[in-house]
Image (cartoon, rainbow, N blue to C red):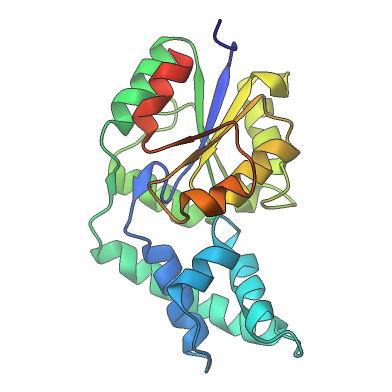
Length: 227
């Protein structure tokens, strides 16, 4: 018998939104513009899924454990916000195949669908606008890093999503994301099911480190779990 889930919380970039890792390529660029030489692989390893100032800080700490990186991180983050906005204006943003239909099918079957993200609210809303996704029509809610005190891996965003959708039992929540930190976030919020999807930032081995309930190749595999 399928576990009765009431709310599915999806990450955005790499999970529901296909933006070719531009956010992490931008993180890599602004860090390297400060005089470093970090690889995209390491940015994904240490920064994937996190609020972006935190991601920059954590990548810098891995490369420069002996220095106080806060000033460098502040400077890089200021440049990041500008560079990402410029990238998103020109970039073709699309969804992974079948995502919108999956949202529709879930909502028609009385599941709540909420997006959550390490982006700030301005960036997240810009993405929704480009995709033509409307809160209340395409999805039931949006929670961003700006909306909570603690970003991932803490469970604050999921707890806020539950509050906003009147779901009281975390066992009835599924968290879906493309990085281990998404899975950790789900576990920290005591979600009944955590799912890693292999369409974005991290590979199977990296996601498996967080021990999710499922690892899937695409979101369409959720139908067999939920519907």
